[in-house]
Length: 239
Ligand code: BJW
Image 1: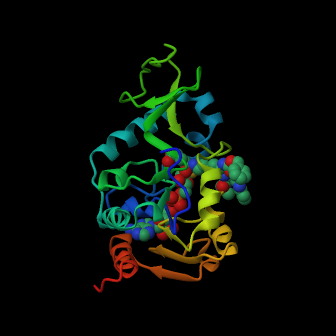
Image 2: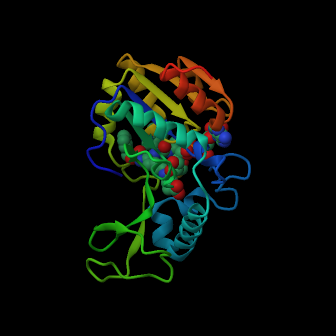
């Protein structure tokens, strides 16, 4: 996450696993998703990590390596292009822990569920770049303890940047959600906050989601087609 990135943008975009699906990063809840072979409570809770840290580290080490071998797709590229035109008037809030927005060129990205490329020390709480795999257990550069965990937000933990996100949602003119199932809060509630403050709301998703009824408009299709088309509309270009 980049602290202080939010401000009062005109457009807030919330992205979920669906935007990275066409890059080859599996989603969570779709058929063949990441959690098909795992129970959520075995890999995405602090309790799971306490009980069986090696299984959780192995899961995230594998994902970190997999993400390093894929590339951003046209949806990430279109959002980076929109930022080049709008600057501070665009904020991307992502639930994703991959770095595909940044690798496409976006800089105003808030990772509310943390980042695969970062680690947090359970002993001293310092945060730093991931030194590679966390198994068998590299030492913390700050305190020397071998208690590094992925800097990601599990169920029951507080997401990053919520105050900044609230300010941005209250100020924005448009809120757009891309490729998220709306199954996880507080992100699933952002559409209600934005519309309560008068923003236009638009959902771009392959299929209807749990929060489709809360959006003024919903467009169905792959992000790689819908996002570039929407960006062209915003910028007043015709496809
Ligand atoms: C495509 C596509 C293509 C596919 N093109 N689209 C209120 C009510 C009830 C419960 C709660 C509540 N508030 C809090 C809770 C508890 C809990 C929660 O939400 N539980 C639910 C089970 C109900 N939330 C929390 O614990 C959160 N913390 C918290 O709330 O702190 C206290 C607090 C209280 C009050 C206010 C504020 C704070 C923390 C949640 C942490 C979530 N962590 C994870 C794991 C992160 C690390 C990791 O990646 O491993 O985050 S869970 C997982 O789900 C991950 C994702 O970011 C998140 C959302 O998933 P996402 O992105 O939506 O993916 P999918 O797979 O679900 O959906 C994919 C979508 O893409 C689908 O819709 C497809 O159709 C679409 N798609 N291909 C376009 N090509």
